[in-house]
Image 1 (tube, helix red, strand yellow):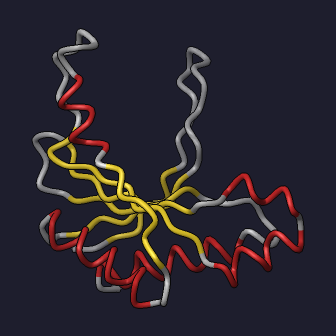
Image 2 (cartoon, one colour):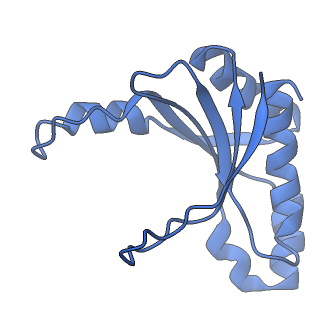
Length: 145
């Protein structure tokens, strides 16, 4: 079952800093199937994946080096890319929208879980909503919505 989960991280009652807002979808398919679907949806729009960050592998590889025994993910990757067309429009509206580029979509499977999560950061109101719509379309396609 695929479902949209608006992931609005809230600060803990103790006043901890809050995480950035994100939009997350849950998928029933395997991690590798969803990761392939994300990359295919990006490329299918005529975009180029600039980089795949293997965050889960890095965290596991360095876990002991940093003194941790916590396994965070079965797998976790972040796909980064830009759109010349969309990026130009949002940066012509405000050149400082450069701070949001490149755009990233993550695919993650938490340790001990079968659920695969796919998502991206949410963007501020205004011109950056065009980027959010682009990412949402890519993710929805990848999870079959």
